[in-house]
Image 1: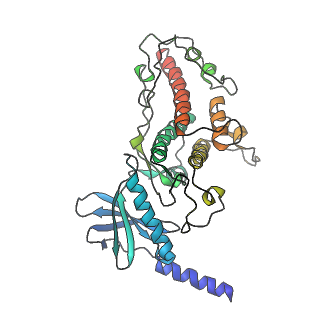
Image 2: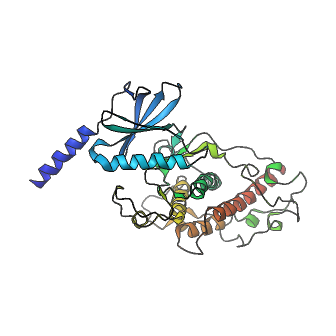
Image 3: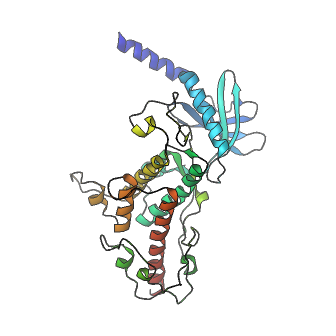
Length: 345
């Protein structure tokens, strides 16, 4: 009997939460073009803003979840109002029609990392993965600077649009032609596992004192622009120190059941980096699970960073600024080797 009741409830929820038809207009302004996805508490559509003619994302509070879904959508709208970053879609309007609540926001271009990895088979090299996480960390840092924590930095919530820059000049890594020593080896910048020193100086990557800029920007080391990535879905986001939301879905993740802290997003970035690194891993048939350190065999500095992000070994990172500093150093070293190799081909 209980199984029949449960089945009936599921059928009712499926009927209640069925997507609206394409072509419908919500609030006299947003024409629905196609469904984009259904989450635990919302349905998202690709839409067209009839006032501006621009594409938009329209999220509907899931009818079967009642007031809990509506409260989460209101919170997401308020959260987006606190943020101001080109890689975070802006909220356009919160509107109600026929008893349904909707949040319209800018439509982030591109595809989710989840779709790229699992539907299109996109692979990322270690350097590409580090660059992408560097750009994403910059976005997350803005969220933290505004006193918030995303709490859901996962591959379905990161949009990727475009490709990484293919060519990097000597000037992009902070030194003029002729300043780079010809004998810089891969081992000096940590590509061979275990050969990277814990404290890498400019001299260790082949620069004479003063030849490497002390403050290397993302553009200088050829990172993908932050605008190529977008961070979406702030439905679970909270202010730093805020206790768990009564309306939020139940979770086995202890972080979701505790006051919100920036360290949660750093842990998510570590898991996301692992996903990217595994995109190019091909296991041998029948091989047992050996853990990421043995399976991926990352460079020493990448291994050390992952351990700190995941909390498995080493001191935890103090926050996004420290993470950005680490990533800038790692990527600058790799770029130095790339430029050196390009010159001697």
